[in-house]
Length: 350
Length: 277
Image 1 (spheres, each protein chain N blue to C red):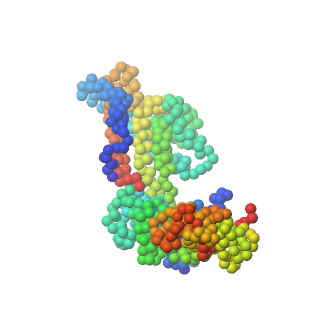
Image 2 (cartoon, chains in turn red, yellow):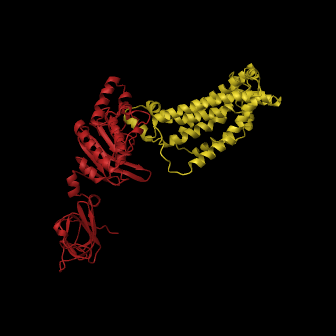
Image 3 (tube, rainbow over the protein chains, first blue to last red):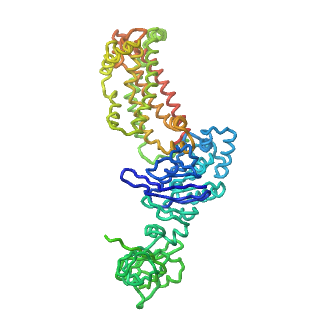
């Protein structure tokens, strides 16, 4: 018995924040809502929590419809982006608050707080006030606080956005470990792809209030369901092309299309989306060359090569740092281009 | 937490501190010192005789008692007013927001005369209250109402910005943890507002102890009953008893200063506990 969200819609004035979103989360799953800022992810989370009311649709937790239930009765934990810790309470009081307001006896409260400070690595900080903690510690207190009353569902709204990159890594590891240990069904919102793919069992891509795709991290990356997902995930070339037979042409560059590339017709304009790792460049001065190198940018373990296709615009690809293909690739060099995988989408009539 | 004692990056500390002290001396300390000096023209016995006079003691009681009562009423209803102004949007909110400051702008004598007319036994509000057996004008209750009127903006204006800053997130967090509205208000919101509320209370109280203009009309100035300490001072001045007037004033000053100091210390203590997270 997990969570079911059915036909959820919400507008703020004329702005459609959530548009007919339906999904299920199985018990014990860790799911990411991924999408650009302002796309409605947080609103979905707040509706599930009961902090917003939906205009249409329904939310059920463990088979029970909770649409009319006030937030405090839903037994849902919520972790806010900016921690929302109680400043006048110590770490211990913060974590124990949810038990205290429910009338849990002091001894039991202390036992539970002790357990959670252990799991979250907060031992020794019990008597501190939030002002005396680092950002990472504060978010761990927030996480422990939301877990203390043993919620049936944990919601996290951009939980790691307010801390710096190194601490974020550490917090992700805490969250994953906590999830594996406690096993609470969890949904977190993020705009960070790496975070979604690295942490979640399943990812739902949300854009403009709509659920674009619901799948495993591999499915989202390799089989994007919509043009939006194809563009949003990873780094891609977005190229205007003309389709002729089984090929698409981008200036002088020919790109072979898989059979049944949806919706593209011969002679029609199409938009090609090619991932940075789905094309190869190599040095070629002969008739194979279709582009000229503009920039070669080392980026840690990989190299970004930017080129200009004859008769068309810029194109780029990523190579491993020591790749043999990089021989002779320097600004001004002529290159051949091979596209191993491309997705074509019809261009809507203007 | 201790503030950093490290060298300040902003230059001009010496100059600005010097200016601050000079300014404070000219505007506050020198006049107060002159007051103290004048009162020393009395012997200890004379001084004690003036300030322990039953009429003067009654005036102190009324001044501080009514000021305390008014400040408490203002703390309660000022908080409520600030809450409504911050948390709800309704037609006329801006207008009400502007109205809050009026007691600052109105000459206090005008306020006093208006309140007296309203609350006199024949006034719009005084007549129905008199029918219920409650007299306001020319009683300590009237003094308290006048002081409430002039002190209202202090609490609203100190609590309002804090309330605006108080993210709704903390209240939502409390609700998600299972707290009722009342538990959230008592356990989360009030502790966050307490420092600002205490400041507003202190300001309203300080303002009320020194108030003169609005009270002389509504109190009726009956010795032992509705005579406030500032009026006692004025009366002594009119009788050319300057030393006696300053003696009464010095005691008022001492009491006010002690109370404000205690409130400030309380603030500092709670500020240290809460930090700025």
